[in-house]
Image (tube, rainbow, N blue to C red; front, side):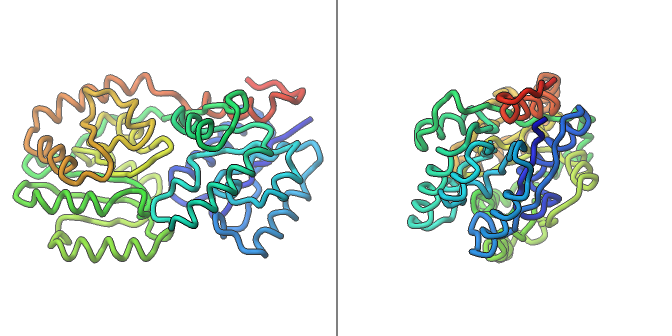
Amino acid sequence: MSSIVFAIPGDIDAPTGGYGYDRRLLQEWHEAGIEARHLALPGSFPFPTDAGLATTERLLAATAADDILLIDGLAYGAFPEALAARFADRIVALVHHPLALETGHSPEMTEALCRSETLALRHARAIAVTSLATRHILEAEFGVPTDKIAVAIPGTDPAPRAKGSGNGETPNLLAVGSLIPRKGYDILVAALSTITDHRWRLTIAGSPDHAPAMAAELRDGIARAGLAERILLTGGVQTGRLAQLYDEADLFVMSSFYEGYGMVLTEALARGLPIVTTLSGAGAEALPDAAALKVPPGDAAALAKALARLIDAPAERRQRADAAWAAAGDLPRWSETARIVAEACLRDSSRKVG
């Protein structure tokens, strides 16, 4: 009987949306009685060393011949074609978003990642993606046939409604996500530096470990803008602390240039938070307009205008919070997400899912 071997590079416990998605699939499969296990791949992906690639090939070769190899896209998009081809009859790729779309790559690196991911995806027997937008990108830019792709939108857990800071005069703004270029935190700081005459505080919860140089630049930029007393960088936080930050927030903000989905948006929606976001992915596009103000990515002036509008309008924040809370009940649940990915993995086997 086929089982799923979920191959994931690096630290699966890292507090990022992608790893959170992966952890939740494994949890849901365990609870549903679906045979699945985690296989840890080297942490050098998506820029693997020769030793890392050799280790990866050895680990995959050691799995049972009828195991389905679900490979997280952080690794799979950087597979040499020969490695993908060796296991082609058993590979299912999980693409959160294409590696080439990560902000901050050189043109040469972007081209190399696009080429490697295109070739690797040709050898996957099926592909699971986390949004319709990512499916469209794989079809249009990577030549993936539609019938190979399953869309498994991230689930959301029911959550208590956020209480807020209790400080109506100085609302707490919250942003969540690793300190990497794609998150656009430099744009957020630039936007806030133009509205220092408004009362606000911002907390950014996200690990600096994935792009230390960028994280250092962000800290320096905050200091140069004179905002060190108003912007708190918490670093990576665990689940309990993150829940507390959501509970104490008055307004959620996402400044990303691009997101395959943007799980933090639905997490904020689930807590009934009003939202200011860039139109950077499927999650932002799907947010009810009554709950969120949406601006173009990379536009500091538009972001500042939207933030100032809600900072200065507690009544509008309450209205948008009510709209968010009303929409929270319609969010997809993780059990359905896990079922879709399991079906993509096991649909050609004798194993039934659900």
